[in-house]
Length: 379
Ligand SMILES: [Cu+2]
Image (cartoon, rainbow, N blue to C red; front, side, top):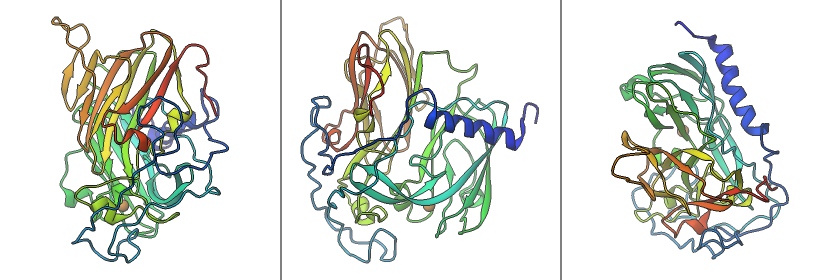
């Protein structure tokens, strides 16, 4: 227990990290005056190639063996059509792109309230999401290799949920247990391996719970920790399968064998870092923690105009300065895979980051790093 600052202190530490993200070194992150858009069609600039094209949102084949009582299904046997953008939908809240701070000490108590709430996931589109901590993705947790993490869950929602930490090794019937509305549960694990790890709700159908927002990342630093860089960002790629406005994600859409998400997003909101470019500077060294939470679609993470000199993907490493001069252009991530990527911004200008599966760039999977003149956070 040496070094354990106690639950209050750690909760405070996490809270600080979150608070710093929401109000900290960048200008306020609340997006204002969002224009009306159509799914995937709200973009206007040339960055991102397919951006600006109308969303296809094609009708998906009806899934056949889905249960009939799940929220988000609406009692229907066919996937929902794409809803129409609501000009009165609340503006989205920008999700902080900065990676969380390393928690101090070696034993961590983290509070994860389970909250079901409306979230604007793109301009004009609201989902009644299920969340860990009130955001999609849920809070990122960052610890040392070997640390103990105790996650205190309180279910404030209307249905049962659970949690599964991929950073842990435990029997599913031991800790990935049902947490009924009003109940509490503490999930305890040791961070046995370094990496970026997914966590998600595992309550059946797990697809529905992930598709409706119940996921996030755990960062376990390698032995000796990470070298200091100029900026660290954390991005979770995921999909939204829209039901009606203000309803949970559409289960049948998500369950299709050829899923066609309405939006593919970084940190929960379509194109948010394209609308609000992330300011960097020429020659800055950037570390990106990137997780593909899915639930269904792969990522091919790429930063236009840069080359990754360091990649740690699922325990396999490309190292800067390797004797044969290898580099990397895009990192392939299947759902539940993650990577740590480093690059240097070569010169002033804009650098789009995307999944290089370009049919999804126009559906929201695009952001921008901006270096040099004008590289301030826009609103
Ligand atoms: Cu759940």
